[in-house]
Length: 264
Image (cartoon, helix red, strand yellow):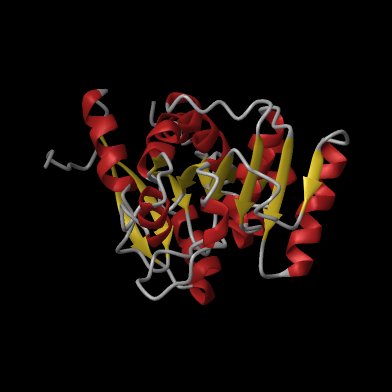
Protein backbone atom coordinates (compact mmCIF):
# COMPACT_ATOMS: atom_id res chain seq x y z
CA UNK A 1 0.00 0.00 0.00
CA UNK A 2 1.22 3.49 -0.85
CA UNK A 3 2.33 5.74 2.01
CA UNK A 4 -0.39 8.06 3.24
CA UNK A 5 0.86 11.43 4.46
CA UNK A 6 -0.55 14.76 5.57
CA UNK A 7 -0.77 15.83 1.92
CA UNK A 8 -2.78 12.83 0.75
CA UNK A 9 -6.16 13.73 -0.73
CA UNK A 10 -8.99 11.57 0.66
CA UNK A 11 -11.92 10.18 -1.34
CA UNK A 12 -14.64 7.77 -0.26
CA UNK A 13 -17.41 5.40 -1.22
CA UNK A 14 -20.62 5.39 0.87
CA UNK A 15 -22.73 2.22 0.98
CA UNK A 16 -24.87 -0.02 3.21
CA UNK A 17 -23.73 -2.79 3.24
CA UNK A 18 -20.14 -2.04 2.27
CA UNK A 19 -18.45 -5.47 2.14
CA UNK A 20 -19.24 -6.08 -1.54
CA UNK A 21 -17.78 -2.91 -3.06
CA UNK A 22 -14.90 -3.23 -5.53
CA UNK A 23 -14.45 0.48 -6.19
CA UNK A 24 -11.54 1.05 -3.74
CA UNK A 25 -9.34 -1.52 -5.47
CA UNK A 26 -10.06 -0.21 -8.97
CA UNK A 27 -9.90 3.50 -8.11
CA UNK A 28 -6.73 3.22 -6.01
CA UNK A 29 -5.00 1.30 -8.80
CA UNK A 30 -5.94 4.11 -11.20
CA UNK A 31 -4.64 6.80 -8.82
CA UNK A 32 -1.39 4.89 -8.34
CA UNK A 33 -0.84 4.52 -12.09
CA UNK A 34 -1.45 8.25 -12.53
CA UNK A 35 0.96 9.14 -9.71
CA UNK A 36 -1.80 10.89 -7.73
CA UNK A 37 -1.29 11.39 -3.99
CA UNK A 38 -4.80 10.28 -3.14
CA UNK A 39 -6.66 7.33 -1.65
CA UNK A 40 -10.26 6.16 -1.78
CA UNK A 41 -11.62 4.39 1.32
CA UNK A 42 -14.97 2.70 2.11
CA UNK A 43 -17.44 4.32 4.53
CA UNK A 44 -20.22 2.13 5.92
CA UNK A 45 -23.12 4.57 6.32
CA UNK A 46 -26.68 3.50 7.17
CA UNK A 47 -29.57 5.44 5.56
CA UNK A 48 -30.52 7.18 8.81
CA UNK A 49 -26.97 8.54 9.14
CA UNK A 50 -26.49 9.65 5.54
CA UNK A 51 -27.28 13.35 5.96
CA UNK A 52 -25.00 13.66 9.00
CA UNK A 53 -22.19 11.81 7.19
CA UNK A 54 -22.39 14.13 4.18
CA UNK A 55 -22.36 17.17 6.47
CA UNK A 56 -19.26 15.84 8.22
CA UNK A 57 -17.46 15.18 4.94
CA UNK A 58 -18.36 18.69 3.79
CA UNK A 59 -16.20 20.06 6.64
CA UNK A 60 -13.10 17.96 5.89
CA UNK A 61 -10.62 20.24 4.10
CA UNK A 62 -8.55 17.39 2.63
CA UNK A 63 -11.59 15.49 1.34
CA UNK A 64 -12.13 15.56 -2.43
CA UNK A 65 -15.41 13.73 -2.92
CA UNK A 66 -17.14 10.39 -2.80
CA UNK A 67 -19.02 7.73 -4.70
CA UNK A 68 -22.54 6.87 -3.52
CA UNK A 69 -23.95 3.40 -4.04
CA UNK A 70 -26.84 1.27 -2.74
CA UNK A 71 -29.01 2.52 -1.02
CA UNK A 72 -27.85 6.14 -1.15
CA UNK A 73 -28.12 7.18 -4.81
CA UNK A 74 -31.67 8.56 -4.76
CA UNK A 75 -31.55 10.37 -1.37
CA UNK A 76 -28.17 11.85 -2.32
CA UNK A 77 -29.90 14.04 -4.89
CA UNK A 78 -31.46 16.17 -2.14
CA UNK A 79 -28.21 16.36 -0.13
CA UNK A 80 -26.11 17.95 -2.87
CA UNK A 81 -25.80 21.72 -3.32
CA UNK A 82 -25.82 21.32 -7.10
CA UNK A 83 -26.36 18.41 -9.50
CA UNK A 84 -25.69 17.93 -13.21
CA UNK A 85 -28.55 17.69 -15.72
CA UNK A 86 -27.85 13.95 -16.03
CA UNK A 87 -28.38 13.41 -12.30
CA UNK A 88 -31.49 15.60 -12.28
CA UNK A 89 -33.03 13.67 -15.16
CA UNK A 90 -32.27 10.28 -13.62
CA UNK A 91 -33.35 11.38 -10.15
CA UNK A 92 -30.22 10.03 -8.46
CA UNK A 93 -26.55 10.78 -7.77
CA UNK A 94 -23.65 8.33 -7.66
CA UNK A 95 -20.60 10.61 -7.61
CA UNK A 96 -20.08 13.82 -5.62
CA UNK A 97 -17.25 16.36 -5.76
CA UNK A 98 -16.47 18.47 -2.70
CA UNK A 99 -15.45 21.95 -3.87
CA UNK A 100 -12.93 23.97 -1.81
CA UNK A 101 -15.78 25.98 -0.27
CA UNK A 102 -17.47 22.79 0.95
CA UNK A 103 -20.23 22.72 -1.68
CA UNK A 104 -21.19 19.22 -2.84
CA UNK A 105 -21.64 18.79 -6.62
CA UNK A 106 -23.35 15.57 -7.70
CA UNK A 107 -23.55 13.68 -10.98
CA UNK A 108 -24.70 10.27 -12.24
CA UNK A 109 -22.33 8.01 -14.18
CA UNK A 110 -23.73 4.48 -13.71
CA UNK A 111 -25.55 4.37 -17.02
CA UNK A 112 -22.64 5.61 -19.09
CA UNK A 113 -20.43 2.96 -17.52
CA UNK A 114 -22.85 0.14 -18.38
CA UNK A 115 -23.38 1.27 -21.98
CA UNK A 116 -19.63 1.64 -22.55
CA UNK A 117 -19.09 -1.84 -21.09
CA UNK A 118 -21.71 -3.27 -23.46
CA UNK A 119 -19.97 -1.66 -26.42
CA UNK A 120 -16.62 -3.05 -25.26
CA UNK A 121 -18.20 -6.52 -25.20
CA UNK A 122 -19.34 -6.10 -28.80
CA UNK A 123 -22.99 -5.54 -27.80
CA UNK A 124 -23.73 -1.98 -28.91
CA UNK A 125 -27.31 -1.37 -27.70
CA UNK A 126 -28.19 0.91 -30.63
CA UNK A 127 -31.19 -0.49 -32.48
CA UNK A 128 -31.61 -3.39 -30.03
CA UNK A 129 -34.51 -4.51 -27.87
CA UNK A 130 -33.45 -4.30 -24.21
CA UNK A 131 -35.13 -5.49 -21.01
CA UNK A 132 -33.97 -3.79 -17.80
CA UNK A 133 -34.78 -5.00 -14.27
CA UNK A 134 -35.10 -2.16 -11.79
CA UNK A 135 -36.23 1.46 -11.52
CA UNK A 136 -33.99 2.68 -8.69
CA UNK A 137 -30.96 4.93 -8.93
CA UNK A 138 -28.63 2.66 -10.89
CA UNK A 139 -31.39 1.26 -13.09
CA UNK A 140 -32.73 4.74 -13.89
CA UNK A 141 -29.26 5.87 -14.93
CA UNK A 142 -28.89 2.79 -17.12
CA UNK A 143 -32.32 3.41 -18.67
CA UNK A 144 -31.43 6.99 -19.61
CA UNK A 145 -28.05 5.94 -21.00
CA UNK A 146 -29.69 3.19 -23.08
CA UNK A 147 -32.24 5.67 -24.41
CA UNK A 148 -29.44 8.07 -25.29
CA UNK A 149 -27.56 5.22 -27.00
CA UNK A 150 -30.47 4.68 -29.37
CA UNK A 151 -32.13 1.42 -28.31
CA UNK A 152 -35.11 0.38 -30.44
CA UNK A 153 -37.22 -0.65 -27.45
CA UNK A 154 -36.79 -0.64 -23.67
CA UNK A 155 -38.81 -2.77 -21.26
CA UNK A 156 -38.66 -1.77 -17.58
CA UNK A 157 -39.42 -4.47 -14.99
CA UNK A 158 -39.77 -3.41 -11.35
CA UNK A 159 -41.74 -4.53 -8.30
CA UNK A 160 -42.84 -0.99 -7.35
CA UNK A 161 -45.40 0.29 -9.86
CA UNK A 162 -45.17 3.93 -8.76
CA UNK A 163 -41.41 4.03 -9.19
CA UNK A 164 -41.70 2.33 -12.58
CA UNK A 165 -44.27 4.85 -13.83
CA UNK A 166 -42.19 7.75 -12.54
CA UNK A 167 -39.17 6.49 -14.49
CA UNK A 168 -41.27 5.94 -17.62
CA UNK A 169 -42.60 9.49 -17.33
CA UNK A 170 -39.10 10.96 -17.15
CA UNK A 171 -37.97 8.81 -20.09
CA UNK A 172 -40.94 9.87 -22.23
CA UNK A 173 -40.28 13.52 -21.46
CA UNK A 174 -36.61 13.27 -22.42
CA UNK A 175 -37.01 10.78 -25.31
CA UNK A 176 -40.55 11.16 -26.70
CA UNK A 177 -40.00 8.75 -29.61
CA UNK A 178 -38.68 5.86 -27.51
CA UNK A 179 -40.67 2.60 -27.51
CA UNK A 180 -41.28 1.59 -23.88
CA UNK A 181 -42.96 -1.32 -22.12
CA UNK A 182 -43.44 -2.87 -18.68
CA UNK A 183 -44.11 -6.53 -19.53
CA UNK A 184 -41.54 -9.02 -20.74
CA UNK A 185 -43.36 -11.71 -22.73
CA UNK A 186 -40.85 -14.48 -23.58
CA UNK A 187 -42.41 -14.55 -27.05
CA UNK A 188 -41.42 -10.89 -27.57
CA UNK A 189 -37.70 -11.52 -27.88
CA UNK A 190 -35.22 -9.16 -26.20
CA UNK A 191 -31.65 -8.92 -27.45
CA UNK A 192 -30.15 -7.79 -24.14
CA UNK A 193 -31.20 -8.35 -20.51
CA UNK A 194 -29.69 -6.10 -17.82
CA UNK A 195 -30.04 -6.43 -14.06
CA UNK A 196 -30.04 -2.98 -12.50
CA UNK A 197 -31.40 -4.17 -9.12
CA UNK A 198 -29.66 -5.46 -5.98
CA UNK A 199 -31.19 -8.93 -6.49
CA UNK A 200 -28.30 -11.37 -6.58
CA UNK A 201 -26.16 -9.86 -3.85
CA UNK A 202 -27.56 -12.44 -1.41
CA UNK A 203 -27.64 -16.18 -2.05
CA UNK A 204 -31.39 -16.49 -1.37
CA UNK A 205 -32.43 -13.64 -3.68
CA UNK A 206 -34.86 -14.56 -6.46
CA UNK A 207 -33.78 -13.99 -10.06
CA UNK A 208 -34.59 -10.49 -11.35
CA UNK A 209 -35.98 -12.01 -14.56
CA UNK A 210 -38.32 -14.86 -15.44
CA UNK A 211 -35.97 -17.74 -16.44
CA UNK A 212 -38.14 -18.20 -19.55
CA UNK A 213 -36.57 -15.01 -20.94
CA UNK A 214 -33.23 -16.81 -21.15
CA UNK A 215 -34.46 -19.45 -23.60
CA UNK A 216 -33.98 -17.12 -26.58
CA UNK A 217 -30.33 -16.68 -25.50
CA UNK A 218 -30.11 -12.90 -25.10
CA UNK A 219 -26.92 -11.20 -23.98
CA UNK A 220 -27.16 -10.87 -20.17
CA UNK A 221 -25.40 -8.06 -18.29
CA UNK A 222 -25.11 -7.56 -14.54
CA UNK A 223 -24.58 -4.36 -12.52
CA UNK A 224 -23.72 -6.22 -9.28
CA UNK A 225 -19.99 -6.54 -8.50
CA UNK A 226 -20.13 -9.07 -5.68
CA UNK A 227 -20.60 -11.95 -6.10
CA UNK A 228 -18.82 -11.93 -9.44
CA UNK A 229 -21.13 -14.66 -10.74
CA UNK A 230 -24.64 -13.83 -9.53
CA UNK A 231 -27.44 -16.42 -9.72
CA UNK A 232 -28.66 -14.61 -12.84
CA UNK A 233 -25.31 -14.96 -14.59
CA UNK A 234 -25.04 -18.61 -13.56
CA UNK A 235 -28.51 -19.31 -14.96
CA UNK A 236 -27.80 -17.32 -18.12
CA UNK A 237 -24.55 -19.12 -18.80
CA UNK A 238 -26.24 -22.48 -18.23
CA UNK A 239 -28.89 -21.47 -20.78
CA UNK A 240 -26.20 -20.75 -23.37
CA UNK A 241 -26.29 -16.94 -23.11
CA UNK A 242 -23.24 -14.72 -23.43
CA UNK A 243 -22.78 -12.75 -20.20
CA UNK A 244 -21.14 -9.63 -18.83
CA UNK A 245 -20.15 -9.46 -15.17
CA UNK A 246 -20.58 -6.31 -13.10
CA UNK A 247 -16.94 -5.23 -12.92
CA UNK A 248 -16.63 -3.95 -16.54
CA UNK A 249 -19.37 -1.39 -15.79
CA UNK A 250 -17.32 -0.10 -12.85
CA UNK A 251 -14.06 -0.08 -14.79
CA UNK A 252 -15.65 1.94 -17.60
CA UNK A 253 -16.84 4.68 -15.24
CA UNK A 254 -13.94 4.87 -12.75
CA UNK A 255 -11.95 7.38 -14.80
CA UNK A 256 -15.11 9.50 -15.23
CA UNK A 257 -15.67 9.44 -11.46
CA UNK A 258 -12.06 10.37 -10.76
CA UNK A 259 -12.33 13.33 -13.13
CA UNK A 260 -15.59 14.54 -11.59
CA UNK A 261 -14.07 14.44 -8.11
CA UNK A 262 -11.02 16.33 -9.34
CA UNK A 263 -8.63 13.42 -8.71
CA UNK A 264 -7.41 13.37 -12.34
